[in-house]
Structures are given as C-alpha cells and as structure tokens.
Amino acid sequence: MRRAIALIILALVLLPAPAAGGQQAAPRASLPDIEDEVMCPICGTLLELSFSPQAERERDYIRRLIARGETKSQIKDALVEQYGQDVLATPGDSGFDLTAWVVPGIGLIVLASVLGGVWWRRRRDPAERPEQEPLSPQDADLLDRDMSSYEL
Image 1: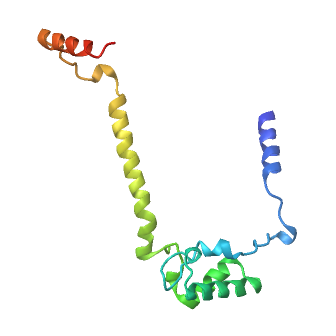
Image 2 (image 1 turned 135 degrees about the vertical axis):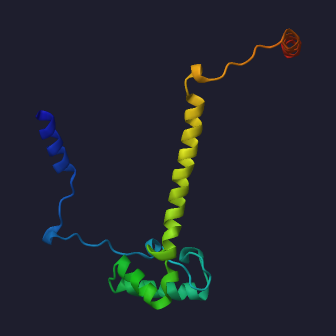
C-alpha cells in the first residue's frame, strides 16, 4: 500500500503542470530548427546545406513567416503550398512514401532475427554439439612440433 502511494506521489510530481488556460503555448519556430527538415527545391539537398539563390529566397520566406509568429507546422504547410510536397525532407505517411519508413524497420527486424538465431545456435547446450574426433597420433605429433617452434 505504501509503495502504491509513493508511486502515485512520484507520478504527480513528475507530470508537467498544465499551462494557464489549459493549453500549452507552441514553441517559437526558428530557422535552424526548420532548415534541417526542409529541402532546397532546386538542389534537392537539405536547406541547411544549400547556398543557392533559391535556398536564400526560401530562407527569407521562412524568416518572414517566423516574424509573423507562425508555428513550425504552419511554416511547413506554407512551404508545401509554395514549393510542393518534395520540399519536406521526410517522406509522407501514405502510399509509396510509406515504404521509406516501413522497409528499414522490416530490415532491422529481419537482421535482429538472423543475428538472434545465429547467437542461439552458437549458445546451445554443449551436450547437443557433435563430438569432435580425436587427433591421430601423427597429427598430434605434427601439432606438438609446430607449437614448439612458437615457444620462447
């Protein structure tokens, strides 16, 4: 009973307090925060890595939206409206774009399964492992002579 009360108190202490009015204010958008999530429509590279004239125009457009007080999601929506869906650095969540999210996940699951199977087969009970045949006297003598050449 004491443990349950202690867990409830701990949970209440760790929960963030709600902002006044019941809604939390959206964090203010910044250019560096958006630049790494959108692309230059001309170069096809991240905006933060592009220095083409078009990239500079796109940055200016983002700065104007930030100055108007737009949130990050509103700015991304405005960029999509202005430049098209390809301006976003992350693929969409439907259709063919969904495969960009699903295929790597499936690949990781398959890889983990294969590695787990290999590990399990190597760690199985030694009694299940096949016995090795003992060395013949000639092979044992040859091994001893070879090993003695490496001794100091």
